[in-house]
Image (cartoon, rainbow, N blue to C red; front, top):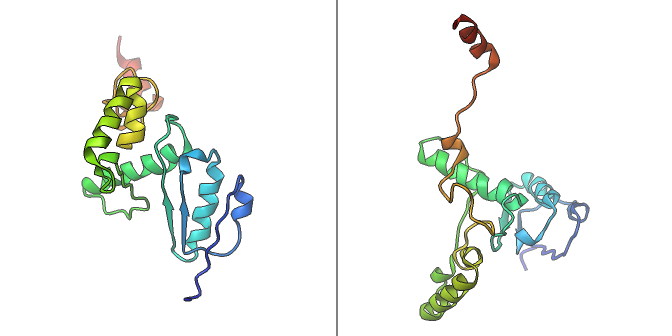
Length: 168
């Protein structure tokens, strides 16, 4: 009616996504796609029209999946910078939608289903019901380790070496 063109496709490679500039693209179950190139090509198609890329997904247990490292972590870092007063433009937004916030599902039934899942596999329940990115196994530091906060940069050798040579 208004001249919009909808193109629905299932693609296993980024080569099938090239073409005209896009205004908006939506990928569903993005964590099921093992190809990070699809995200790269999609963002490139959106640049000309200042378009938007919408991704939805249940979190994966793979903490190094391109969706986690290239989208989720970027959004969290941009959010943290904005909260610290950084005025750099944000390129990525993250909205989590846990199952218990779904208005179309009975809250009592959802709580029971989540409790049953947590008994069998707590990490899976966190991914499937809470929308959290967590691996299958607990980490050494639990969920509290943050490299940007807990790791100090090592000074350059040129800065350290003169100090070491004067110590006798």
